Length: 440
Image (cartoon, rainbow, N blue to C red; front, top):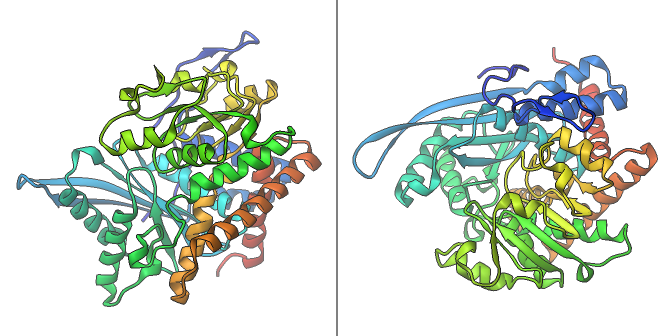
């Protein structure tokens, strides 16, 4: 275990670009560097104590593991995994586990930091953490995936636990992966410990409503944002980048609630129909091993083209660094709801603000997932479970309250929604850190 530093060893910078003022600018595509920039802006606005700022820039614990997995062909392959805990001043750390060939320590650091602010913004008693394994999930059989998950869980079991650090699903992982993680950890304890992870199947202590929570929360936040413009969901067109656990669910709920979803995309490509897409049929197509591009209900487009469509609401729900200073000028949507973590770079943020685009940041927009994860954790600890209607109602109430707090902060301080959210989240974590002090 090592202490995080501010060095950026992995993801570097994009090539220089010519800005509209004629000056050149090099934009970072390193999510950790972007996360630090966002923290610096909030700290400056808050006039944060330099010592506390220094503490918040660093992660409390980082674990890198290299573990062997027996493959189906009899060979042994060594995988690299991470578990990073950013801050636990407000409670045990909480955050997903990402299986991706493109993940690295800096991505995990950034995601852990963003989780700290997210939990504080919606005011639940967690700090931020994140995990990752460098692997191509699609190339693994179910047996290989299970063995990988169990070895990874065993390797990080020294830092996770129901009272210390609680993993959850993220890109490339799902409820089944969480069940394997829970079972593996439980074997090390000699008893069933359902609260060690969230996002599990209901049959083994999962919560009703957890699978749809992040996507459903995105729709709730969009509904609140539309009130600023005197509109309802039934009045708008929507484009969703990403058609997985977050974007796919959001698109379906948008469709159910009367919004016209005109474009969606996944890792392969996308589809666009200005008259609206039949989202249930698209879901059926992808569930049957098809892709969005094989569906006949619209025109094939790329994920990048989707971002630049002339729609009312744009939901980037894929990966980070999708809206940059390279394409921000071409964004036509009036409202952006960030479904993914870190989809907009700091330079792009400034361009979008100049264009008058209303953006609801990731740390608020996609917080429905961690809210219901919190509910699942509470239910597991109590061994008392709620109905889905109650879960959704509680999540909606807390998320809407958080949105309104952030909006009030934005108006009071005359800042954009991202900085307003950070002012709330960073201040809460800073106050907790100051109250607890430094031991010994």
